[in-house]
Length: 625
Image 1 (tube, helix red, strand yellow):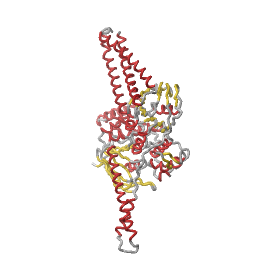
Image 2: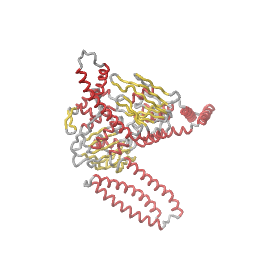
Image 3: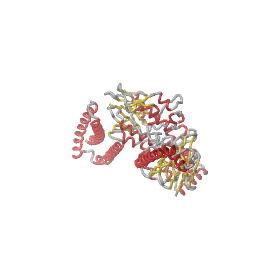
Image 4: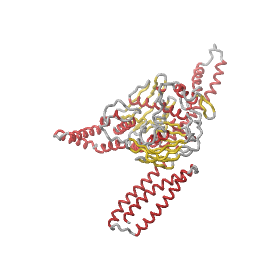
């Protein structure tokens, strides 16, 4: 069954054409990803499908019996309602029943019980029973808790942008619509939230149209991709890798057609020029065909052909050293006694829940804030390129080309000098966009310009704080290709697991209460290791619970096996402490290559975990001894 049919849609704003004569449908159970460059019209298309905007031509037909929910990219800053009022303001019958039930509970808890309030509560409970809405209530509570939405009496307008987006996303999920439109749902979510949302959507039977830059999320949730490109719509049944392959084949076919059209155009142009202007025998049909041929022959394929390579300033022997740094805000430990010596060419990913202190670490490194304790020592040759979440601050509204020229009129690029305009074109800024004012750019275009400017400063220590937010999926692929060849130091804070898997060789994990742990390997390896550590710790705690009663029954007298285990543990702990000390010396002497440093770092983490487990068991046995 078709839930939605879009026929021959065309939309433009002024002289800017977004799409022309596009048609598609969404059927029951389909989960579709919508891909396009920033500014190509993804959000505009969703607004048209929802009826918030009208197309220049074409129409949208929606099945009359289905319900649609929509998570838009922006947030409503003027909403004066509480979170509770927003979540439960719906015509969904389950939410309506829940709203009445919660209202009755509040009245009884805040007032003296009366016959009226008790009767209203009984009726609300009866309605919940009839609808079997108690499971639905548990589902609502789970969704809210997953997004850490706890105080439902908060005013929506007082929340941060990220919190507002989570409330809007929770509402879209809770409404249990037949068809769900999600515009960049993973923005402002940490990795654990993204993974939960990914699993949740994959299991739901509802239809989905999704705009996302997260490639793992796309592959795990969607089974089809539609792309807006060159004002048209192209459909692909497969994952993101399949899309890239088929897109490349399509572009190659288009280039072949253009080349053939150019060759034919030359021949037809000679024929046109040979014929006397007054001769009536000239074929009108052939002349008309010549006009269409000219349009085809001079068609531009807007794809960057040049590999992105930026000159990097020289990097010296001393990079960066963090010495016993601590930082707290309002008596909350953000970073506690953290030390690290950076090596040449290191690539570090930073993960942790939102608000745990990831950006604080970056700001300490760049000197934007100072530590409460310890120090950060930066090498003399280090030139930071810091792409942070605040974006460009432009005191006056300038044209894009002028913003770039303020940094450099001519740019050293791939062993040659090019103009600012040519450099911008490599980042998919067309001539029209280059002479557009900054204020007229879309959010994604502003972020893309900010990325360009960060790289333009030739950093040898590149810091990227959530670079994937608001960037389109194609720009991210281009960024990845650049980062693979980048030879400086790299630090990335990101919830994009694909980026972390392909770009970093170890992970700084914020574990809570100011503790930062270093895990060797990429994100997938880190996740696997952490799961093992958590499993070992859980087993260790379970062993303690099971064995303590046994010891009590034996009047705390150690058995022969316990004595042997105690002696063995003492020897093993001493041996591990010796090995740990030796590894620390090797890590700090600066003589190891990158591969050996990774091996040593991995072993150091294993030793720490083993010491924790063995020490706990040793203490348990020492009490019996």
